[in-house]
Amino acid sequence: MGYKRKFTLISILMTLVLCLGMFAQFFIGSNNTAEAASLYWGSTGNKVSEVQRKLKQWDYYDGPIDGVFGQSTYDAVIFFQRKNGLKQDGVIGTQTANALGIQLTGSSSSQGSSSAGGNTGGNSNDVYLLARVVHGEARGEPYLGKVAVAAVVLNRVSHPNFPNTIAGVIYQPLAFTAVADGQMNITPDEESIRAARDALNGWDPTYGAIYYYNPATATSKWIWSRPVHIVIGKHSFAT
Image (cartoon, rainbow, N blue to C red; front, side, top):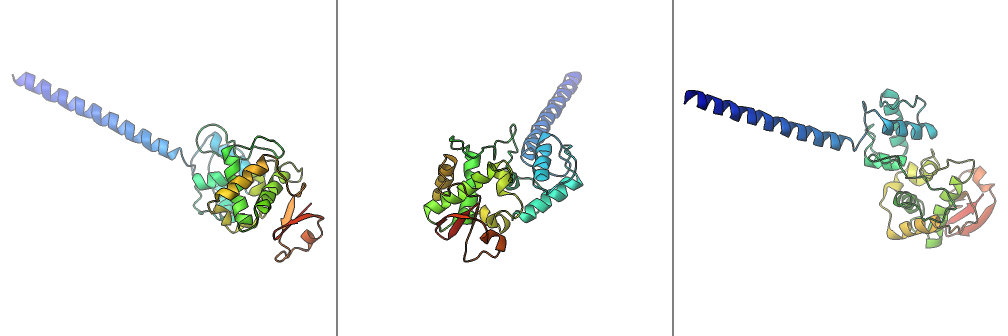
């Protein structure tokens, strides 16, 4: 009987150890899944390379595209976050990823990939990103003025002097006041979303304008030299 009790006790202990191991594996796996939803110092892989390419394209980063999140990538992320009104923590979470036009999970990002002139309406990321800049730049303007602001972004996408993606145009350093002062981070309303969608569907009330400004507040002498196509609300739209 003593041997049987001893064998039973050993069996129970082995079962407990096995259960604890399975629990630990599940817990660690869950944490890794959560960590995959952000990029930070020490992260590696294709997503880090994608971030580096984006930051390099917009002159925030001058290091190698090596897929390693180290000091130079961290510094570039902080610089990007500071310039775009984001929390300066050096971590690429949801907000910073959206600002960069990338998706943290899944395959390559589709955000910002649409070119102007395509009558597809854009994917949901394109629509929402464009709506955010519309809401930040043209909140309070007539609906036509909101579509016009979105159209300027899309006209820049197809223009050789500007980045060739929606995200690239919007986050080009100092291109839009709403990005610099953080107003773009305000949740867009339904009208701004609809205006973005209408512009993506091909509506351009500006007749090809790639600039706009408010004559009452503009201080740049250069912008006043641009040929104005149309005035909508408080904005003049020019090339």
